[in-house]
Length: 310
Image (cartoon, rainbow, N blue to C red; front, side, top):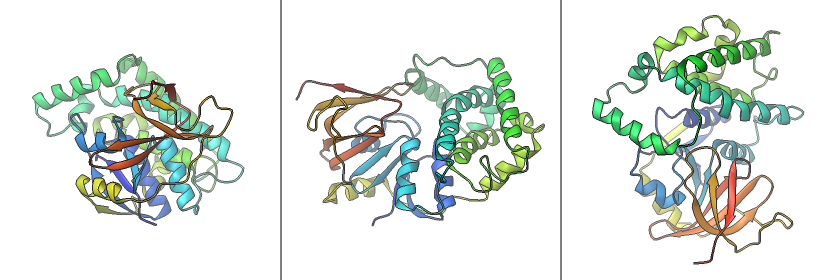
């Protein structure tokens, strides 16, 4: 089975989540660097327009959103498990909270002027303006907290996490790590990119020790790959992951659909429906460079719409 290809960039917090998952699993994987801003022609060739970072590839299958990517990696290598028996529901619920509520407090807190100077170190003023212009439509319609509000919320959330660890447990749900640990960790990792913002963690000794434990998992064994190589691998693939459209979910195999995130980065991806369950939606699309692709999205957090057939 070919190894996974992670399309990511260094300062992407959700990319760090998956890099840590690879480390937890001690897996070898291929690393493709993607631009942090448009244009992203190689990204669009593979995803059809979804431009959130990261995304995961194996052959001509593309997985979007880290909640789904983590499940796919766990299925490919079940040990050690990301979803321990008896804890899976609670761990996934906390992970969803961390990837949304916690994350959107960390971002405005960390990207205050004294923080952004470190996160974007080396980027000239015109580059900072271009990044802001790129992200403005990307987050249009998303309510962003002010730095003051984000700071208050973040301190409250960190206190709750500290309490979760108060009994001396090694990880958030006991003696073994779960998906919850990696979803919280990537948020704290982003704060670490801006040393002037780290004092917010000072009161939380157990949380700081927990973060150090998670960070020691590392990133597994990445091998650098060029995006053109990843596109060529997709074009050369002769099969896809098995999928099906389950009955009773309001759609039929072969429907022309678009799939769009419901929160931010609401760029619709169009294709033919080939897979649908309560957990996942899969569309088939054709690209002149990448061939016939199956693009997978989680069902939660994404909207499916029927479209007129081309």
